Amino acid sequence: MKFVDEAEIRVEAGDGGNGAIGFRREKYIPLGGPDGGDGGDGGSVYLVAVENINTLVDFRYHAVHRAQRGQNGMSRNCTGRKGDDCYVSVPLGTQVSDAETGEVIGDLTKIGDTLLVAKGGFHGLGNTRFKSSINRAPQKASKGTEGEHRVLNLELTLIADVGLLGMPNAGKSSLIRSVSSATPKVADYPFTTLYPNLGVVRIDDLRSFVIADIPGVIEGAADGAGLGLQFLKHLLRTGLLLHLIDVAPYESMDSPVQAAKKIIREVEKWNDELARKPRWLVLNKIDRLPAEEVDAHCQAIVDELGWTGPVFKTAAINGDGTKELMFAIMAFLEQGLEQRRTGSEQD
Image (cartoon, rainbow, N blue to C red; front, side, top):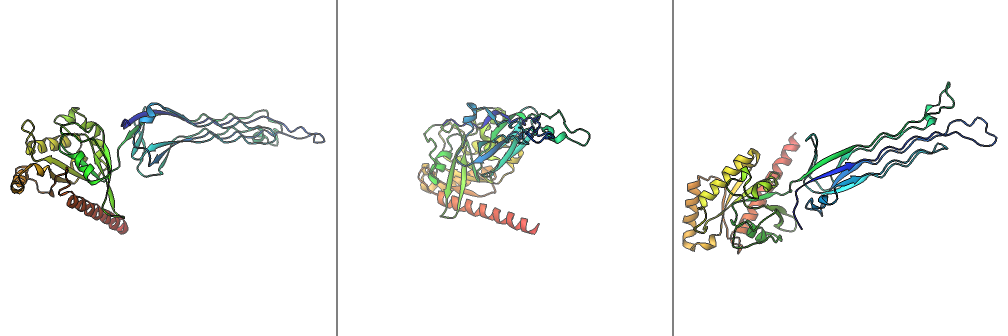
């Protein structure tokens, strides 16, 4: 299925039903009076975050969503039926904005989150509402108001705890395949990942987290080169970034240090918020090095980068070092959760 993370849709709420003009005419009741009922309210349009959708591709083919019009009022003071609301299912992590004004209307970040995007019209009033002591047979009723019509921009940002960041062919897809049930394409050449992938890492029956893999970032991505920039936004919601580096690249490729510095420059250029996120260094593909050279080679990379944060050595292709990395991530996420919980209790 094609991955689509942006779409434009039109939503149209239902108009309110018109009020009725009617008079009670029954045998033996000569002074029946007005009995026109009110119309029904128009239906509204809501967006609902659901779990079983992970792309906006369906909205490319179904771009207009309408709620039902309210029924007109009837005689005998019968009120028209309210129009049915329209509920539109969207992926978790969908941000909604008005296409004309750019105003952000809402952000659906939890399963079941519901957002009103077009309010139905108000019902019209029947002539019964207009009777008074000086106007006992009103000949007027009001029309229902129009429902809201809007054009919306939908933008999907994946919800993940951990994001993978790195140059093409750094081994991101191999890592997510190794630690989760996700099956992104893996090959011995760059640019095998063309769209984001999510994987659930299960530490045990009660503990798990979600990891996101995006296409590799190349030099110039912040200026539009490659696919990486298009999908970097999917890392904005993560709590931790894993910066993967190929410790043994082919001769035609950048050195590990050069590749790492390019990534850091592009991220800092693109978004300050993303650049400030906690980031761990993962030195991948150590299986390509002689065992006795791994520690010295990796330490040289760390020293040249001046890296002071956590460092992990892995061989994603065979799982070496990945278990220790996943347990460390789980501990980091649980610590952050505990700190937020403690902070909220103090407030």
